Length: 427
Image 1 (tube, rainbow, N blue to C red):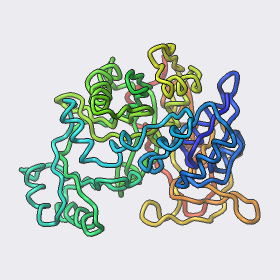
Image 2 (image 1 turned 180 degrees about the horizontal axis):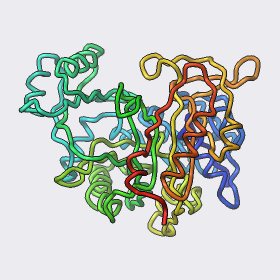
Image 3 (image 1 turned 90 degrees about the vertical axis):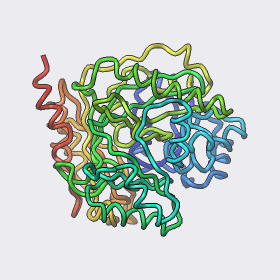
């Protein structure tokens, strides 16, 4: 099998790494890829946003499957153009990817499908902000949740008890010509669940939990994600089945009823509240860095699974098998991230991290003019550790992250700590 993966980040490196482990291994290509991906696949100098060049590359390669990783090309219609050119694509059409491209439209779909989610107000003018806050947080005793309506790479959300900070964020989005979604705050731990869909059938992967704040103790600004772990020993039994039944399948059915088949990954960001499961957000692709830990634990071949979804054949797919081991990933971020990430700094220590038992996923890297590996984004690397339990996996991931040398870089040290301490040692 020949597979072309569109993207250049950690999510795409994790996907390609897992595909490369299939037996027989598929022939792998990436556009544009990154230095880490280049060790596993043939990289092609085609930009993520150049949809026409992607089609031309596909015509040259003639892949059996095209996998689109990032949200921006999906929302822009990359899957549509590739399908129109006759290729089998894993990734939703632009109409379906609007679930991520517009939070207000996603709320409309959830309401129509009866999917449990936070109450919300869509705001299009500054003079509507205060009334919106009064509706979503009438007593002012909970954090305010303010979201940019469109794509924001995971950084368009502010959750704060400071109403002036919430107002300032809402104003900044509106002043830039955007729309704001205000939501009630959902109490309870958050869970990420990837649900693969072929437009009709749905298959859930293993749940994970990620960490959005930049600093230990959930301090600092929101980011695209600073780490993740799986499994979730504290999650209720049958959670994935419940989410498929009450969230994913009703959403997929509602879209289908509107003539919008969803083929790809429906990322369900969830809160486990005292009143039950509630949707925090939908994304239309694999999440980063949760992909790094979920795919690390997947024992079943990945390529046939993605191909079955792309062909509308999930109903006949074999039940998924999962490894018993836990997986933890820790993001190594560049100086200044997320506000103003510094780039161009030399990276070393990856070999040391991997000798210690971790594996290192490239998320924001490039080769400098002298051939040395340098930082090229805010989240530069994600270091993945596995072990018999979360404690063991954490030790490997953190040791690997400590081995990375990148001037000004930082990482969180508390990823999966509370869950590991509650879990105790493996039996």
